[in-house]
Image (tube, rainbow, N blue to C red):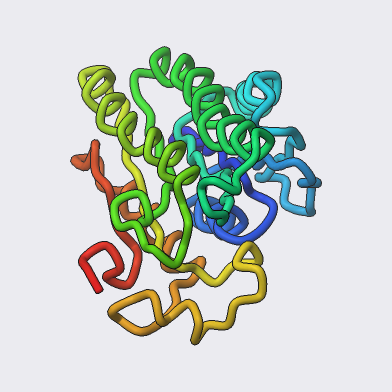
Length: 235
């Protein structure tokens, strides 16, 4: 009898995170979904665990819930993130603390806790959602705090892939462009499309399909999959 696999998805209440929950359920995974405001729905295969990603106790609680309810952790998608679009000298200590706590802290706490049961099982998969602005900065989108934090995660992706590859754990990253989500602050598809050589905005489904590809191709690790309409290639 095949064992049902289990995915943990952070930042799962809306946008890309909610799309990833749906994608993993379609793959047949049980899902433990977390965000600050998430609540349980009608799907018995999805368990919601509310909590602040910056709080180390949230990661402990989420991983424990996955193990208690489903007995394993096969995949962690580090999707949670904040983005502060301010000129660098206008950023505050509070902005800095928020970005460090959610972006880097969330990645650190969840990844460290999830790797333990993966090692015990003999393998697993971690996917980090970053931003293409890390590799392709723009003068019209101030993104130093994103580059500092999501860029750190991008670097850690390769390091973790090498450190744990011989123990069956793969680590990959997805670098989205401008995606139509509630986090875009009401920007129109036409406004977002202008950032991409393909002249169209990205969708949640675009990102979900990329993550599913990484999930299903077991010969891919240490990879950065740019789903950005060509933004990282140039302008």
